[in-house]
Each structure stands twice: as C-alpha cells, then as structure tokens.
Image (cartoon, helix red, strand yellow):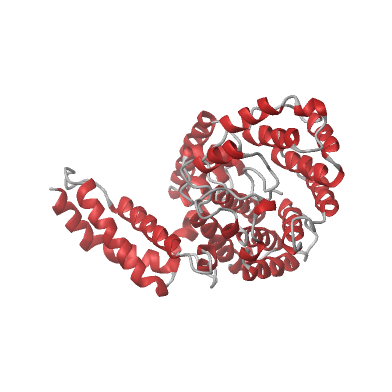
Length: 412
C-alpha cells in the first residue's frame, strides 16, 4: 500500500517540488535538486510503507527533499556560503506568498499576533522556536500560536463573507513583517534546538523574503534597507562561526578571512540606503553595530567605544533584555570588567540563558572583581543548563565567552 501511495505522489508532486527547489536554490543546482528529490521518495517508501492511500505525504516529501538538498550543499561547502548562493539575485514573491502575507497583515490582528503567524504559517517555525525568538516559555508560546491562529481563522472567515472591509495599514504591515524576518534570521543565526548551532537555510530565507518585499513598491523604505543591511552583515560571518567539527567559534577566535566580503559590501550598501528618511528603527542602530565589527581588521582593533555608544542609543530608544545584556558586554570591553559587572547588577536577575552566559563571562574574565569570581561556578553551571542546541551545550563544557552574543542576531 505504501509503494502505491508513493508512486501516486511521485506523479503528482515531483514537478511541484522540483519547481520550488529550483526557484529557491537556482537552476544551477539542478543536479543536486534531482538527487535530493529522489532520495526523499526513496525515504518515503520506507516511512510510509504501511500508510493508507488517503495519507497526505506531499508536505513531508517537500521538506525531506529540501533537507537532503541542504545537506548536500553543506557537504560541498565551496568558497561561498549557502546564503551567498541564495541571495545572488533578487527573488520575487509568488502569488500564494503575497496573498498569505496580505491576510496575515489583517488590520484587526494585533502586531504580536501578526508576528506569531508569520513565524509559524509563513516561515515554518515550531512552537519552541517561536518561544526562543519571542523570549517566552514553551507553554506561553504554544498558547499564543493557538490563539493567533483562531483569531486569524475568524477574521479571514468574516472577510470572505464580506463582513470586514477595512484596509491594511502599510506601516503596521511593514513593522510586523520586518520583526518576523528579524526573528527568523535570529533562529538561523543561533538555533533553538537540534545538533547544529546554525541553520543557514533560515538565514537565507529571511534575506530572500526581505529582498522580495523590498523589491515590491510598497516595501521600498528605509526600514527594510536597515534590516537587510543587518542580515547581510551578520550572514557574512556565518562560515567563520563554526569550526570543522561543528564547534562554536566566538568572535575573538574567528578567522576573519572567512568572512564573506561580497555580503559585507551588500550590507554596507543597504546601510547607506537606510539613512534616507527621518524614521530611526532598532535595525538602523543594530546595523551600525554590525558595521563596526565588519570594518574592524581584527578583534583587538574593534572600536568598543563606538559599539558601546551604539548600544547606549539602542537601549535608550528600543530596550529589550537581550540588548541590555549586550550593552553590559560592550561596557566591559570599553571600560573594564568591573564597569561591566556594575552594569549587570543594575539589571534584574533573570533565569534566561543569555543572562547567565553574560554573568559567567564577566566572572571568568582575568580582571573580574573578586565578588564576581566567587560566583563563577554557579554562573557557568546555570549557563550550561540553559543552553539550547547541542553545539551550545558542548561549548559550555569548554569555556564561556559571550562576545558573539546570544539569541539575537546583533550580538557582540
């Protein structure tokens, strides 16, 4: 029965999956795409051996084929990164994507619901990944997803029956979409769970959507310029953020010759474009921080005074717990560990992994005050127990150093 099901799906879905992967990864990847799809169908014969004919496997096959393709591309790992391959040309949003984004930007949905729906329905993040992105516990995030989906279904249903005719507000739509893309990139930059530290395909998808939205007349504004600048600059460092064995390499240990200069140039260009207009967003300031890192010839030559000043502005204008912790690190790098420790003590103690990672890093620095050194063991233990993916867990077994940041894409 399973063989018959897969055979029927092969005739029905092969072309659709091929078209999707060619659109995302390029026609120059056709050989790898063909291999990946064949591997997916072979795997389906085993997985769905006892399934009935009415079992829906189309989505499973598409996801499996894409995973197999990504694994192939990672094994090849030429001089370019997966992100570099994917953003070589500006993609266009297909009709279904445009319609889904339009519906998610419904004026009756709150901004928080829009972000949750974009992350879940459009970007494919699961409940735990959304919890990490929004800094919520798993249960709260799951409840928020369920409520947002129910509200979404009710509103779309009322629109279909002609009961709602309010127009979408472009600014509200842009802010929700920009935040969703920012959080999607974040999940790729530091994965919530799993064996890998990075999920490059999520970073690439965030950039692809950002480019496509910006290419649309309604999306051509400074907000998306700043967001794209930020994502390009951070993506330029992806090849250097992990070693050959998949271990995490923090900013002081990264080989900057592996940073992608083409992506840096794209990022700097978008940063300059983002300076038009009068609206300042968090993406502008975070991109300015990323520029400081990208322009420094070495870790020691980083202008920590300017980085700190940017974080001062970021925390003053757009405060979040993660940004406040990043400012603590910038203060320590600029003015010494005692100053950083004092800045940390001004913040409320948290149970989050980033809080204890930052605290542990301060405790273990050579110039840490004695009171900080006394709590180093506790801080390291709590940071380790709160690590997400297995690469982070292995990292905490070796040393603690948060200069490269935790959980949000503009970390030091």
